[in-house]
Image (tube, rainbow, N blue to C red; front, side, top):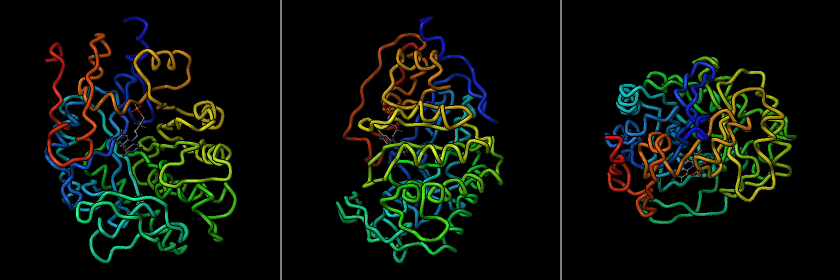
Length: 359
Ligand SMILES: Cc1cc2nc3c(=O)[nH]c(=O)nc-3n(C[C@H](O)[C@H](O)[C@H](O)COP(=O)(O)O)c2cc1C
């Protein structure tokens, strides 16, 4: 297994001390209670995966306005904090490290998901093409969003700071800003969804202001060494389009490079003709977590080549709670069931067995 040894070297990213370089990527699994309170099976699920050098817990909303999916957790209420506290306690009891991915859906929202009277907002009043599953009314088109006023944008930035504070109160070791997949920060960043004429719109430098200010606001309240950023240059998911995604992301990376973030988490979009990892190394001076369908051998090679400083895995963690152990011992990986990815309950979530040797 010596060819894989780079995976098991400890690392320090800001205030975060990783026991190895295998990161669990954030995965929305829709197992929270309807009001966004984390459920007890979530504590089991995350604690089973606490051998990861770092767990990035799933995209979690800052306020009801930002909720994108049914049974998606929040970090806005006392109940949310108490629910997450069970998760972080369980992970820490097993020596794990866990940060929370902070997510505002923006125009990726539906009134069939949120409490009555809660708006769907966006940088500009441009509806995203596409549909979302709702527990109450099946598939629904995304709402026509309302454009945020400049004052409201500033309030949403502060909402991110509050979410970071709440995450710390819930016992998380840090937070990661979700700036991919067409949610609010990426809506600001991308020219196709941002036609604002105030300081949050215009050229790439102005469009990068919202995610940068969110990071700064979060860093101010919990310390920059506990804040990470996730990006995905070239991502077209959720109707995202940009005049020049590589250049726009390079601008954002340069703007945040001097902040001293714990890490930049870079997804390489499957069809984008952008070398996202190279772009990040060239424009961001700090630790990189890289993500793109890696296996153990390709991940170890990428660490060896210094393409990244850690590698995140999403799908492999679904059916392999003891993924780190399996990679260390060369134990074959289990498959997972796609049908139960987003369904309520423990089946296909917290009931994947540990390999015999890990018991
Ligand atoms: C079920 C599922 C849910 C996901 N949810 C999120 C999420 O909440 N936040 C995010 O940034 N990425 C999310 N992703 C993307 C993954 O973090 C990851 O980037 C992607 O699956 C590619 O990595 P992999 O090849 O190791 O699976 C999700 C992926 C899957 C399969």
